[in-house]
Every structure is written in structure tokens, then in C-alpha cells.
Image (spheres, rainbow, N blue to C red):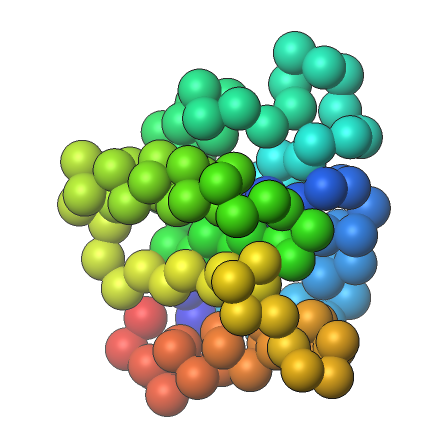
Length: 128
């Protein structure tokens, strides 16, 4: 089973890191978390820092998650960086999960993320 590498953008690192438990025994792996408040200032989110992360990871991540606490303008900017990276690197079979624009009605973002991941990749696992 091939690993599906994920990069997340969130306000706080520990919130995104809570996905480690649901990812156990799945092909999903949080490859990097870019945050606004938990890292030293020079390593917090900026389009440049996100680009460095996306271009440095090997293999390239297939999934980008934008957290619900991210502003609309920041979400738009980060998605533009993500789209540029997948186009330039030729990354196939990608998924964008934008919780900022489409938060789950029940507030259960972990189930929302797992549902979207499984919806995209579960039926394709034998092919990966």
C-alpha cells in the first residue's frame, strides 16, 4: 500500500497533529504541518515557507488541507501555492480539502477529512 502524504495549514500545530490517531492503519501520513502560532515566527505560514515545504518533500504530497481557522485570503493564497506546486512537479491524483471554505456542518473536522480522503483514495488503494 502506497503512502498518501499530506500537508496541512492550520492555526495551531497540535490541532492538525490530532489527525495522527485516525491515520493509524491507513495509507495517510501527515508529512508536514505549517501553522500560524506554534512555530518560531520565521517558520510560521507564509506563501514562501509553504512553497519551501511543498517543493522539499519527496515524494511530493498528494493532499493539502486548509484548516477552518485560516482566513479566506490566506486560504486563497495557500491554495495558489499548492496548485502551482502540483502543476510544476506534475503531481498526480491530488486532493485539496478546504475546511475554511467548506467547514463540516457538525463541526467534526476529523470525520470530514477521513471521509474526503477515503472518498478519493479508498477505492484506488489496490492500484497505489
